[in-house]
Image (cartoon, rainbow, N blue to C red; front, side, top):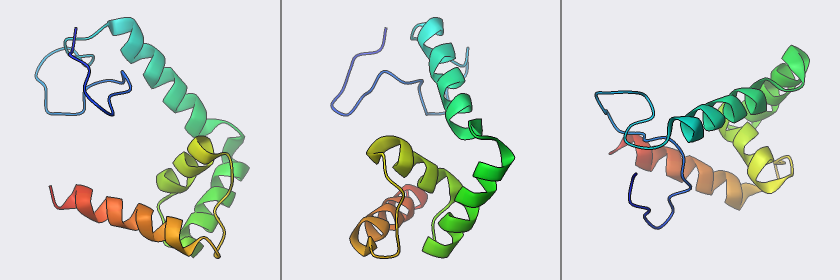
Length: 98
């Protein structure tokens, strides 16, 4: 079992681990997370995904970033949400520069 750290939500490991995809953790937790993620990103069908992609592109975000914002905050980002959009873009740049 992995030792929980601040900000750890119990999801699957994200590093380059050589072994089973669920790492040292519970296989059930890994499979549940994977199924939930797949459902979240495919729910609503192709028409909804195309709509989200168009809106994301207008805001300069990826479809994944836009969808995660809907899932986490429960609202669609608008052009007026300049601060939140800048925050999301800043996080993306930090991840790339690891």
